[in-house]
Length: 439
Image (spheres, rainbow, N blue to C red):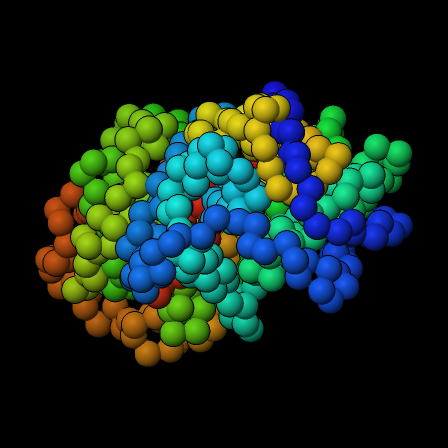
């Protein structure tokens, strides 16, 4: 993907950060107390303080879904519908830069992110977003979100401390221009990347997520079966290991994309959920992705129903490690001034930072393990009902679901998936699977 060009970041307000040898994991050195005492408030705030008490949960949901869908559709287009991304983390990084933008260019970034003008309200958005990934013995999130600047840069300490204290972004330094080979090698080791794009500027944004999680209850290991995987036209394109269960599950039919959706609980007490969508026609996953709208998740959740009898479920066991350079895609969805408009004024660093790269790597592992065993009481993903006692009677019973859903969920053709926290249904990562055997 073509790397976009110049971001001019001008106007330094504050003291100079001490530059040390390469080792950006340590972040910024704490600024001396009182350095910024006379600077006043740098970033714009709303004069209407009453608005800070407004409930923004629905506004945040809309903002997050809208950004997710726009980014998802463009990345899918360029990567043949086989990928996984973390839109929320990228949204937070861009929000950090918006907090240091001036005037017109801040407005452009805020509009792209669907963020309000009032800083106090934006902080409420950030608090919701940043509280979604809570690791434990059931789910693991290993996250890095960094802005790397060349050692010749002098950072605006007030901005850097703000985004660090809000946990939006870590700002660090490395010899990008004097020793780029060493920097790139260490970044690849840090992020677990297989490749790293060419860096032309004096700064860059990087983001990575490694995810591993356990279903609320396990798939029975004895029923891992190898079988064929097909394209949307029914042609066999590879073999995968299917995790199979027969279980009462939640399913929905989404007419807008002509697909059926499976809802699977993840972690202790189902604190997360994975939703998987398989198309029902030969139009295929490409058409379904193009038809996605930012209300699709809300619609799916409203339509989900639990089957009254156990249904056959089979989904592939897979690892997906996806890396991409996002500056071109971000330009397409409205963040063009970040990489393209040298006249933009920012309150980040001096000499002007010129990031030409926004790099993200996301790695997920989807396996059969669960927090509870597969013999747990009914209600979890892998808990097996005594279906043998139903015999032929079960096969003739109504499912209690829409007729279009059918009597099973077999993900043996290209499918979409998304991972959400169950409290706010915020999407933490999303992707599509269409190429068995790809790594």
